[in-house]
Length: 592
Image 1 (cartoon, rainbow, N blue to C red):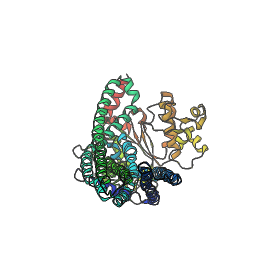
Image 2: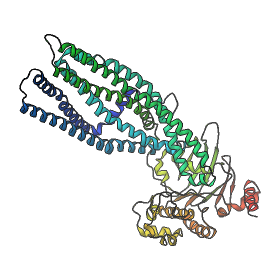
Image 3: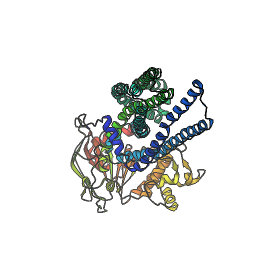
Image 4: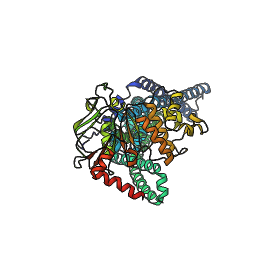
């Protein structure tokens, strides 16, 4: 996405989008708002009762009037009920808000991000660090969820409190009420100004936060390599630099956001002084228009007035933080998706054709140029050549991980660019050099990609891959749990399981990336026999690094700099004494 088209959201627009995303839980938020208002209504009545109690005590102490203990007891019970009821309602609202936002909003937003990633080009995932995606999905969404609490707890509660308290204060005495209210515009203007200043800092903070997550994910993902090369100190220094930057941005952001509440507190302290001064002057007049209880009531109202203002100001700072998170999340959610295409049934033969295919990952570095290739059904095609020559790129294009720049790729005469990507990928089974297993049982890992697989089918696939004996030697057999990093089995055993997975999937076309490179020689021989049996009758593309494994291929494509420089059988290529012969002989020279 170009810099010009990058979305940027103001505070108002961010809150608007957040509110728009709250439609599924609007009923729950409405209930929370009602509970919030009820809590406020209970709380704002207490100063009037305290006013009456203060006046009774004042008259008793100064004028010797009778102290009505029964009435005092009733007032105390009323205060207890009001304060207790408000506390219960506030607690109920917090519990309800937490459950609703966690269960629906937070979960829903993360599911949306997950679904969105599935619809984005593979290039996005290739070019975005895993830690960056984790940061957006976890931290950013959590911060956006917290803002929902801010909107309900702060703005609904704060607005209702401010309106009611203002009305009640003016009913007591307009002069003291004005002393409190007159300072509000100043504090709000100052808080908005500082909040706007903090916006840029929070954007920078979220960027560094994503970098830190990416570094941690990569560092621990390559923990063994770091230890093997004694790079702990270097990695520590890099991490220290990132965290120092992280700390600096976070410190600056929190300082700016933190200035808001002290400014509000200062203005409210001045309001308390103003109330006391004005109230004292009015109460000491020959014909006082206010009582001591009125002054106490206004002071209590002023204190209650301060709370919503501080919360609203703090909420504005929180929204600035949320703005930085929302920019990242909504930018991801609004990225152009891959177009949905019709599901087309292929003929079933397994013929593949490349017609004048051109492709490059970046415009200034051409890679595949005018590739033409026709593969008959059931043929075994080997791709050989130097690293970076374009072997894996050809497979990526065939699987539609990337789309061609020009030309076309056809399966059974159908241009795959006109077919749903999932349908294209359903035609292929894959066994890669970099194995991937997840935290689950051996059964689950073999059955991955095959719905409703039975134990009998899984065991049969394991026997084909010569992995059945090894699995039965595990403590719980096929129910043995493979841990998250797959460290409780060897690299060769991992490869055997992925080969068994491919057997079970039973796709009519196969892609293999030196699938036997991580096993010992004896196991490789057994696997090669099993692979030959697996490949029989299926169209297959084999990326080969050891040429001894593809001497029986029907077609060998020698790829260099994105071009098929030679094509033929093993015997034909050796007779030409060209680039393939040099590669082949160099491997045996290394062995000798």
